[in-house]
Length: 164
Image (cartoon, rainbow, N blue to C red; front, side, top):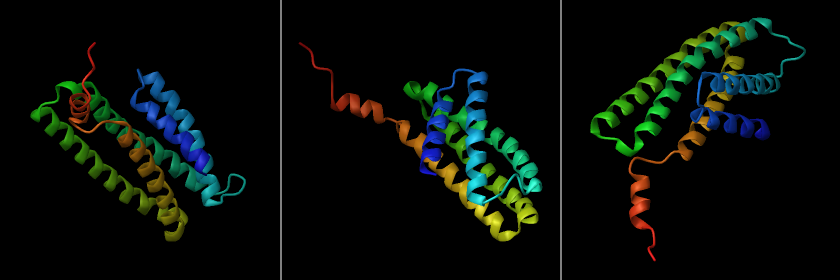
């Protein structure tokens, strides 16, 4: 499981730096296939069993991708504006991030109800536990890879280039 998670984090890390929509679609496709295999293993589904789950799962992933695209857009805007970030831009990015987080929370609640109807409460909770673990691991990996506001300037000031 750790190998698959590491592979998925590497793929998602690359999403932040995807140059165009085709790159993003390719990465999401690879990630989606690996994630589906992980879900199958974790949920202990045998031989394609639980077709109602997979129909709902596909809908879930499609809806989740739109939230992920918004989060990616925020990260790309942060990256693009990092050097010239002012109060107005920082406030806008923070508000967009908080709004995206709220949208994710509502999304998870809405789909937990749907998965509970298909799987029962315990298995729906099991699926959501895995999903939240994966999403938080990916989010943490991405956040660890990007600098805090002002971090690069502090490092640059602390270690000025040596002149001969």
